[in-house]
Length: 152
Image (cartoon, rainbow, N blue to C red; front, side, top):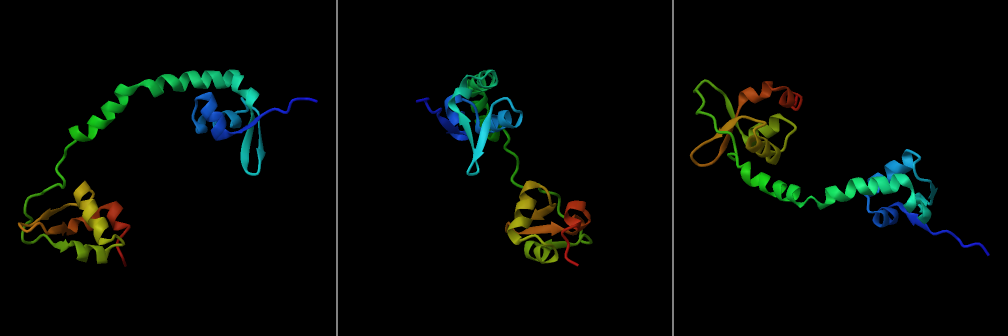
């Protein structure tokens, strides 16, 4: 009796081959490995682990996985990038119109939390008073990314 070949799912195949599941999907799409779709899952013959494309892909991914200095560099990036939590501008002139976060939220499709986040990240301009209450500049209503969110 002939020996039945072992079929692996794409995630099992990726584990055994030492490559990512997305790389396995790409190899299937490109026709570099043969696979059959059963019950909505790609099934790959275990013999395909020895395919040239698989060994080539595993050689590409293994060295990059060993690069630990790159990971430590990523961890240091947020510590280096300490920026002020919110851009603080000079006190507005008396003639410049400002809104509270709640007022600005009712004028736009943003939530109060969204307005606060946009202020902190610099997508909106405004200033905090001595009590820490934000005042949103009316000039934000003319910015294209905000103008499309204004309620009519």
